[in-house]
Length: 126
Length: 411
Image (cartoon, rainbow over all chains, first blue to last red; front, side, top):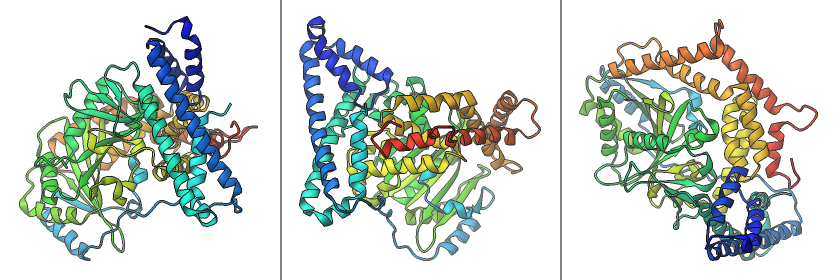
């Protein structure tokens, strides 16, 4: 049975919850329309699931915040990412590069990359 | 009212930043348990977010195994799916583009050799094409298990180079080997007359020593014209999540093109690292590379659930015309990379001619008869960057965007 006036409260509550989540206005409208087409049982189950999750999360967040407030030191260090894997390798790159260049023949050319390219490549991804 | 999601993300960032300090002051096990509970709760929320995003979409469903991914079926690719992190779904391009993206991925991947599948993901701004509208290049990231032999990777690359498909041209491979200093090597195809075993052998050895690398291609696409397509290669020892190499990239900004590319999206460490990365890049590039900063700000604003700032940023970018200008500048740089080079392969030459024509048309449209078109395009970007960071009687747009992670007050 589609969600009708009798369950308008459910729908209203769901819409309210959606504003707390990472959804933009257009998505909230779309989700609301899709929710309205669900049967009452399914909509109620969704509401129950979402409410339960958000309540649990709110409680956990409160506990974490309380713990941090209790901590005597307020200044934390910035989060640091672990270093990526660095494997040992034979120190023969220079000769290998030369070999590659020699083998290149007419089809390939090889240029050493610029020094600034030797940093993390992550930020180059777009 | 501040959305709950923002409170959650701010808490995750603060908790991770101060974790060591908390573990020193309180019972280490208690802090660990609290962190695990937060992670499990976020995992459940991500699962439900993916369900909401998939609602009403016939080809989409929430991924039951990796909460937070929406599995999107691509009708033209039977048996294959695209796994998109939930917050990127509204910005992910529609089917005609996704079909093309799937074809591109099949063309540039090197790891699927002898039945051993590597995981390739769509990365970069193409994942959020619906928001950014224009891209200057297309990026993939391929995770290659250690057991895939170097010679099969080298041979897959050779096959791509030797391919005679006129729309695709594989031009280079570059591998990163870390030791006392980074060593990067660049091999560029100038003629397709051959790729001998003598060449393959040292290439295999270079690949076998590398931790990561990149192949570059010049490809004629329907959605981005003639453009550079890159495929970052990340070598890892399975499982991917346990290998530090997985931290070279962020699962939260990649759409996995098969199930092997999925990673946990709810882990506090990776979630906070992703947010810290976005925040620092937005700050770093806002003035000088504002379109790059914008591309980092879009997922940031989508996660923090701030429509107003996202709309303001995109509207300002559209009004200034910077998205088109940044894309053209990227293409001009691609043309310049080959400028004056002789003996290039015929297929590459043809693609570069088409690219030059495309650039000329766009430059004419955007700059008219400007004496220094590149300078004129850059000037517009520069002005946009200054506006982005300008304090004009109220906090700058940059500051308001960044403050989402710093305070629970409305920016």
